[in-house]
Amino acid sequence: MRKAFKIIITAIVALIIVVAALGAIVFLDVPTYTATGSQTLTPTGTSVGKAIIICDPGLSGAVKGVADKIASDLQTQGYTVTLAGIKVQPPPSAPVIKSS
Figure: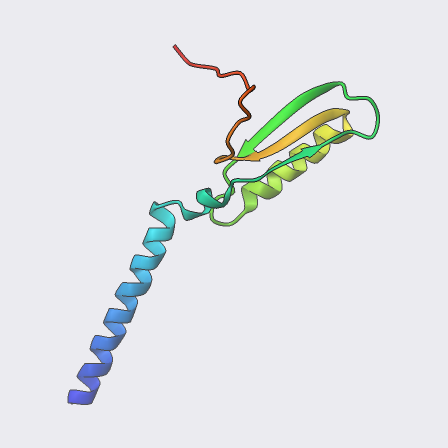
């Protein structure tokens, strides 16, 4: 009986640890801190304009896949596309747009 009680307590503690770890990943939005890179895609011909896509990859990375697809489509239409993660620091020369 005592051995079964130890096993049950150990299982409950392990479950609490797993739930806490998963909760921390979701609620603290850990993947956002990895979205620090940027990439520029240039068209094969003359550029008709510029586009920027800023994305937060999320837990599954599906958003990054959609952003890549949109960037690829814009590139084939002749745009110079910059893909940036949500945590990328803008260059000092970038204009700052403030809402009123």
